[in-house]
Structures are given as C-alpha cells and as structure tokens.
Image (cartoon, rainbow, N blue to C red; front, side, top):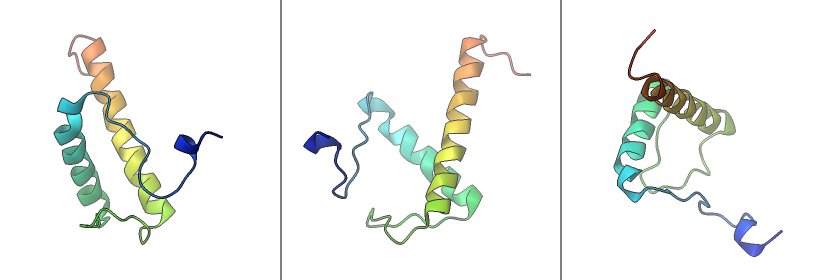
Length: 78
C-alpha cells in the first residue's frame, strides 16, 4: 500500500471542489446537530465512536444523493 494511503492519523479525504468546503462543513454540522453528535472543536475524532461517525457519514451521503437526484431530475421533488 502506498504511504499516501496508509492510515497515520489525519484525514486523507480531499475536497475536489474547494468552493464546496463551506457547504460540506455546514452539512456536517447540521447532521451532527440532527443526530445529537458532538463535533470535536479541535478536529480530533478519536473520542467519537465509530457508530457516531458512521451515522454522520450516512446522513451526509443520504442528503448528497437526494440533492444529486433532485438536480438530475430537473428540480422536481417526489
């Protein structure tokens, strides 16, 4: 496995569209508030359970998919 893919703490995720960073952070905060998960102010998630981080990721993914489906369908909601 290349060194760039080995886990060594820190995030490997890269925002592909830098202008989207604020929106993604906002979505993360909204998800955390909805699920009752405390986002660490220092960015260290070592004290957050896998269940909580998984729930955050699932919530965000569900919302991103819904947004993409709405955009692809021309903005028509079902």
